Amino acid sequence: MAYFSYKKLVLFFSCVVSFAFLAQSDQPNIPYRAVNLGNWLVTEGWIEPSLFAEIPNNDLLDGNQIQLMSTKFQKYVCAESGGGTIVVANRTSASAWENFRVRSGTRLTADYSGSSWDDSDPSVFKMSIVRTLQGEYQITNGYGPDKAPQDHWNSYITDADFNFLSSHGINAVRIPVGWWIAKDPNPPKPFVGGSLQALDNAFTWAHKYGMKVIVDLHTVQGSQNGNEHSGTRDGFQEWGDSYMPDTVAIIDFLAARFEFTNFP
Image (cartoon, rainbow, N blue to C red; front, top):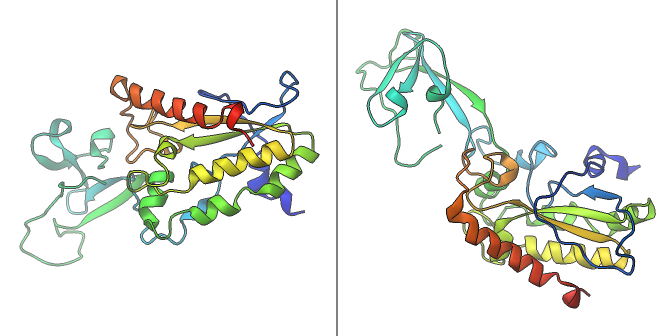
């Protein structure tokens, strides 16, 4: 039966929520049997890696970390002292400083006058990919605004899914969303518009089948943990006090939009 594909089974694992809003119903205090609608409005590549299959050079997306080893010296390239000084190729083992971030304005050059692919050529390096990210930033920037995942939002979760869940005793859904949803329909690049309409649809379907909706602000501006599900660009956590007003504003936006008086 199609509903029991790997994608659908993932829906039956629910997590603890950081920020949540519940769509009202006539039975507000009944126990919740909820599922997590992950990978819908915030991409998590581990759930459906095939989403990234058609991106050119998809093994080198934003945030991927690489190591470079000189084939002549069998030593790793490193930014001395962690950066701000010279670049060397003298490390016998690779650690954090030997992992390079996909950053503009930074490049590594070799001024060797020869030209060959021999291992003895000091301008030849072996590149190893040591970390990949498959999140919302990577998929939207990888495909660009014309091919980014609007079709995924319209087809991954549908009215039929809510009907199916409700008919099997599920009375609530948790929907992770990203901070850019408050900027719809024109969020900052590379994010693309459309997720807010999908969330509106979810509330309509939930109301239709007597279900509640838990809206989880799953990714905040600046990335709260550096993981791909936080919408990070490069795997680093930059969220802090300076982002708190923006985060509160997004929560206020969601609360105002989906309060009971506005619910269909």
